[in-house]
Length: 364
Image 1 (cartoon, helix red, strand yellow):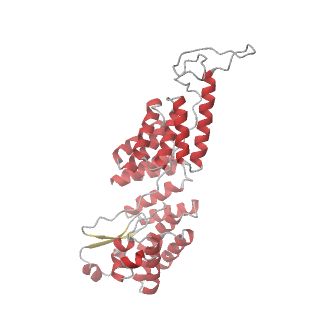
Image 2 (spheres, one colour):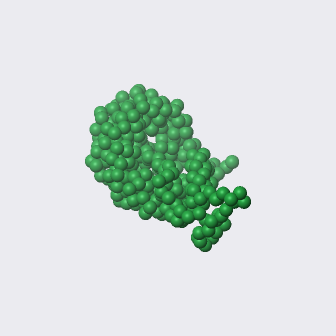
Image 3 (cartoon, one colour):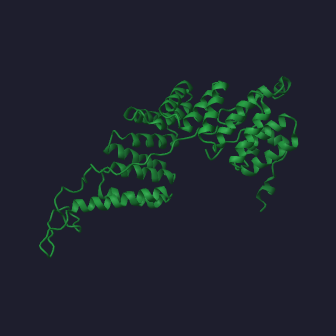
């Protein structure tokens, strides 16, 4: 989770009732994803996303013959598909063109995979398209083309590529999984859930599919099923930090603070450099009124990720709640510097009058 949403203020457990009453029209809560949120009536604030799984790459399918040739030797220059036989000057037959084209396709595929791994998504796209030009029924090439397109933000095209992979290979759990990721990114949550379920039916022991399904179910508001999906992921892969992290988020949303804290801490043990786990721990401790430990966890998150605006914001909230205005403002200013949208989404920050004016914000 590289980008963090911008929701700030105090949890209700830390506010006196008189102040809550004075804030008529404002609901204050700590979100399960790491934000201490102010929800103002009539204002739709964004929630930060759950940590999403990565796309799955396919490997070449050596068993799939090229459908564009018949197995007869053809000249490499033929554009009509008519079979011919070419003989070398020594009297030996030329190599079978089918085999040659498969070797070329494999070369393009390997180069495309290397380009994709290096982040050269346009180059990867071009190379996978060349594989498909040789063999239009190469499901792994369609899948990996979808990945290259998705990484360029071309979601609709990526969806078509994954669907083409499934036309060729309907039982590809990889293509179903990646299609689910693309559909969720498009906003088609129901479609994403159906794709993840199909991936699980085909490959029931792949933990990432359960994590992705849990994220979609959680986004749909189906928390009980989301919990079951995350728990299945933990059972299948007890070293997968994302399974514990998203399970902790779901438990937090159900106000099971004890179990939530245990799973955030499991996340931190498995991936000590993962800043969102530290914010999750801090938010639970905040609600449990263990303020010194909460401060330490927010500071750990900032140490791990100095650009984590949400950690500064929540730490500022805690300091302000304790009456330490100077430290609170210093942390809020860091949050604003990293993400100026705090000035639009945080009532607390706006009320402190520390946001730059439009002129100041555009001055070089």
